[in-house]
Length: 68
Image 1 (cartoon, one colour):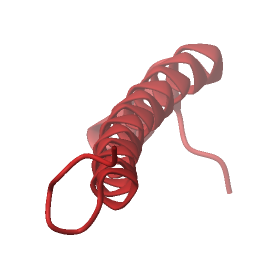
Image 2 (tube, rainbow, N blue to C red):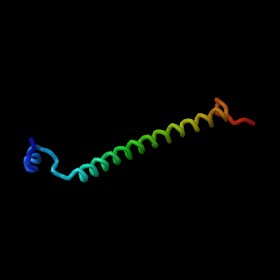
Image 3 (cartoon, rainbow, N blue to C red):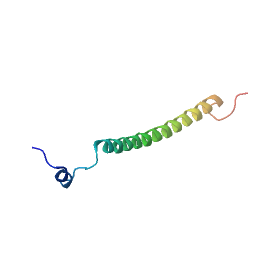
Image 4 (cartoon, rainbow, N blue to C red):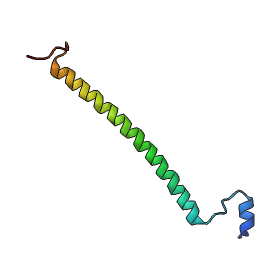
């Protein structure tokens, strides 16, 4: 049993065409992915900085003095 378009909109369904709904969904997904990648890149950068700092500490000796 089909319902007229006005009825489905009255029930709380999105009256926009499927293409518009799909575009809105893709924009939201792209934004979520962008935020995730930004956080991931920030954490990866921090980890890399920690690794470099540890490598410098090991290279210069555990007591902080440089090799001669």
